[in-house]
Length: 396
Image (cartoon, rainbow, N blue to C red; front, side, top):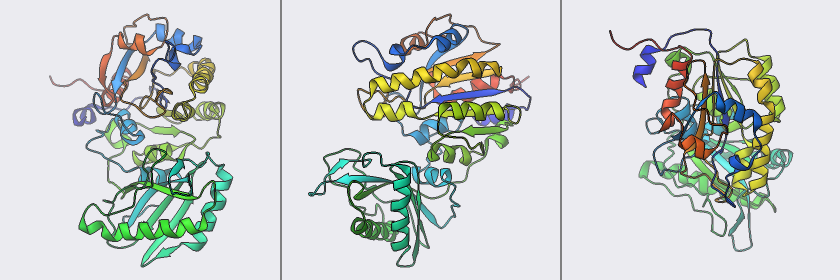
């Protein structure tokens, strides 16, 4: 990617990365969600595009959203290992300092034995989340010499900043990532992180006293400090913008220097924001979340429905005449598994300078046979730049 940085040039061509979070699936009754969905507009575009499959980190590795996105943005996900807490904190608009440990939290439900029965507390409403966070903030604003800053996210998610001296993020996450298990107790991984672990344990203890069913427990993960990394403008000579409804994805975009374009909560709202800002930027990251959420809920038909809704906006997207379009997922979230998975992502690339596969449908199986083959997600950005004529020739 250092080579790509050196070859990048500025021009007026427009690049669109349409990110369908968790797009890839595994067959249920013979078909994946993408194969089951009625997608006439995506299929018409596929006929004029070249298809392929991508691996976010490496074959067989199940990625989190952070590394999967960073790879698509052109950042090595192994070199730039970013904690989820930082992404959530930036996404909700918190000012993060170098004295902070940022943590992503879930309000959850535990039974009378302390076992996790719902990691998301029934996906409580965002308004209820705000109410609970207000109570916590009023009662837990300092532990020892550390300031505690609590901020609501969407539905069951929230962010905590622990701000103080001698804080380090190498501690155990408390989220067991499955129901039927006890929350994990937060202990330090090394000696220098013992203060952080102690503060976190006290925070959880205090929160439990204040919380009531269904949101009667907090699960914490993604402990992280603020990283230093170059922006997409510095690296690729782009003027990039992000359109997303969830805080974490705004945080990811802000981390790499994208402008955040505020929008409503629906796919149509996001489309309107894209149209209204089309003349102001040359790279757009348009993120569609619900495909992933429904995959994690095991809702196969719901995931199909959102894919079909995305298909319905494609004529309006194409009227903007993007010079380069990539449609893909950051990772796969098969409803049959109810989680992220190691399966590769289906990808469609359109520009005036590709040799189309002429496949008549956009599906995982056609992508597996496509002209791009199977390749690392890290290469997506260089392909977009090349098809946008934004890369100089290398060498004499």
